Length: 221
Image 1: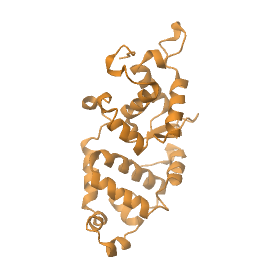
Image 2: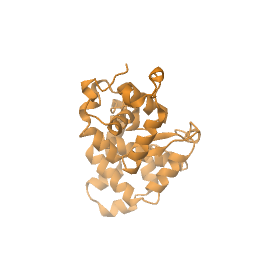
Image 3: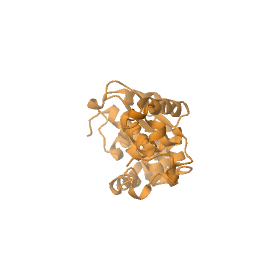
Image 4: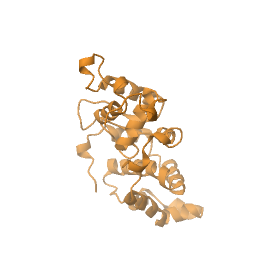
């Protein structure tokens, strides 16, 4: 149901905050979300700010308003992604900074009880399962000798991805790291350690290269 700034729930939010919430509510804390999905959700929250200007076209969402705010959020390191004419390459996802803002200062606006973008049980189970890996156990015990023996194959094993599918391995790693921030702090800290240790695989350059690839080539294993 569409609403406007007369809705008290959103009355204190500016356009950038609404776009950030819209991305979260469309699943941007887990995966890339198409620009039009974000724009339509922002329009549902506030028709006045996110529709075309002429009265007779008020029933249509203005994509450009959302694009401007997403671009600004990207500059602020709250989202990553891009607008693309190829729908398989278009998409946005929250950064850890953007996710923290949603879960802290904007938490009351997220509609958590009905929001399917919140971690589901199978996602929680997957994150928790990482604790059973030898890699995690060595990290938890600060066993330096054993940690030095662990390699990217061990990472692929607990992420359940083939090492031959490097784009999916990188994508899965960042999906899991982002979701772990909401599920288990220990796993999040462990994956931060993994990111630093294996930075030849897990870094922002590699991540952006992966996000820029066609989703048609991002097959789940």
